[in-house]
Image 1: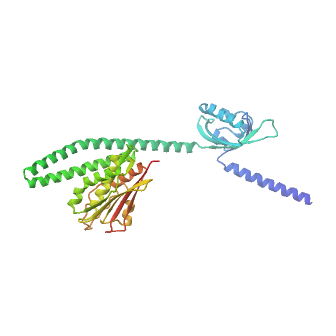
Image 2 (image 1 turned 60 degrees about the vertical axis):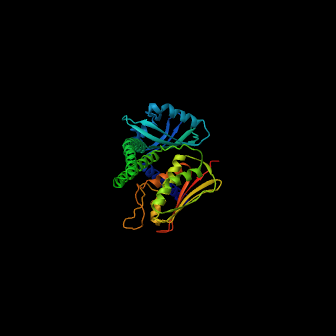
Image 3 (image 1 turned 90 degrees about the horizontal axis):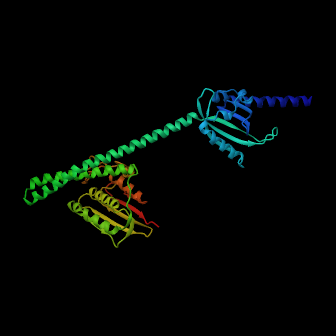
Amino acid sequence: MRFDKKMLSTEQKLRESEERYRVFIENFHGIVFKRYYDFSVAFFQGSVEKITGYTEDDFISERIRWNQLIHKDDYVKVQRMVDKFNNSSHRTTQREYRIIDKNGKIHWILETIQKLCDNSKEEEAVQGTIIDITEKNQAENLIIQEVNKLSELNHLKTDLIIRISHELKTPLNAIYGASQRMHEYLEKNFNAELSKYVEIIMRGGTRLKDLVSDIVDTSRIESNLMNLKVQKENLTYIVKECVKDMIHLASERNQLLHVDLKRNIYIELDRIRIEQVIMNLLSNAIKYTPPKGKIYIKLKDYGEFVDFSVRDTGIGLKEEEKKKLFKKFGKIEHYGESLGVITEGSGLGLYISKEIVKLHGGQIFVKSEGRNKGTEFKFRLFRIS
């Protein structure tokens, strides 16, 4: 009696196990298989007909073999992978390839295989799963195509911007050059009234030239087309020259420049691009510092790196302003604030400066304790070991 109960319990557990396996196979969106190295099949269950167009019995009775479904362009590759795996010590592997179903439709499949030893035959067998990944591959290919299209459009955009900018530069240079000569002539002939109007034209021309240059640089940065010409330079001399170029603007606003350049400092850099960064930082300090303010310029050598800083007694920055400062078009507007500052600019200068410093492998920082508490900009260049 006790033996019968035990038998009934075992049979019940077996039925439950079989039911769980049946439910799993019915709900599995793939194929579970066991086959031999010659591609004959021990069992083949799951979404067999959905993926291949053939029934499980077609494979069991060998009316069709799996290797007959493999796409002709993938057959040699798959056979090499099979041979390599069979002759290796690895127990598991995965492979992706194409099959052609009964109706001629191509499917991409992912096959996961595990080696096992089958006692009923002399040769070894494998077991595993087959999943149809056609839709996944199609989606990935579509994404790659779209990314390539976007990349191509981005290059076209950059090329167009650079071409248009070059076309704009020619007439702008002509306008600016002619305005300069006219201004010189009017000053010599004491025509102050007309000279003022020509100065307005010159300032407008300068702003347009700067804007065109900023747009070109931004496009080059975004398309990874900005290349550096790096060589050993005297950074102290470069800073002095930049200060000389900007001192007249500071004088016009009655600002005092304190320059701390104790000795010559040599470092590897692209002179033109670093001059661009220094001029931008000096220009910002002058523009955003009210008349009679002070600007401190410092260059310090720490051995492994060099710091250049510009600190002013200007209008300072709020926390939220600091967050957008180095972003493209991150210009800080001051509508309704009587701060005695110049707010002209495209909002590209600091973005370009940050990217130039990054291209040098350097860092750029900003420090300010708030409105009317001044600002310090600093960039750091590392020595190449």
